[in-house]
Length: 151
Image (cartoon, rainbow, N blue to C red; front, top):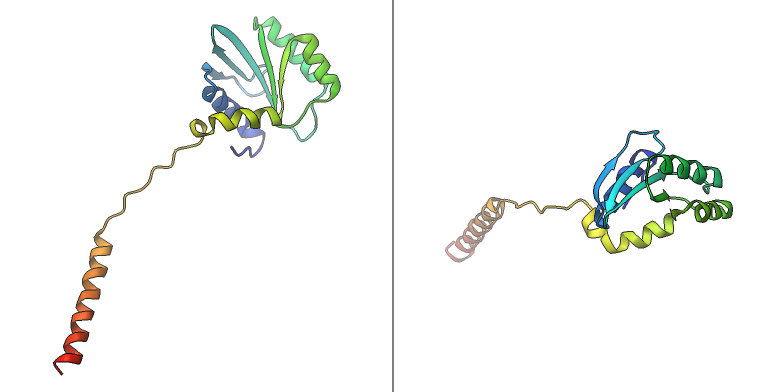
């Protein structure tokens, strides 16, 4: 899984969720408090996906928890390609927000990588080029035999 930048992070997380067995995975508009909604085992989940080079702080977790709670989601997951500060981890525990950092994503991805990657379909090539090459080699071999034997 190649995460290029913030522009494809949400869609990659959505693909990961599908691979993990979530259903009705929907990406919300960019800039909304909740990036992805999904369902699994009868539960409603919401996800905040943040691509960042810095560790995530407690304020981000608290803001997401409040937005998700007011929207009626009981299962809240904050996903980042980075890591979480200690204060963010405490805020996650207090606000009942599950935190997925880059290490968590990597561990999950290992089990579902085949279903996430774009499938490469082998292209069947024509054998005509091989047939033409074989005919040319046979003609040259026959000409060489004629030249050395019958001349």
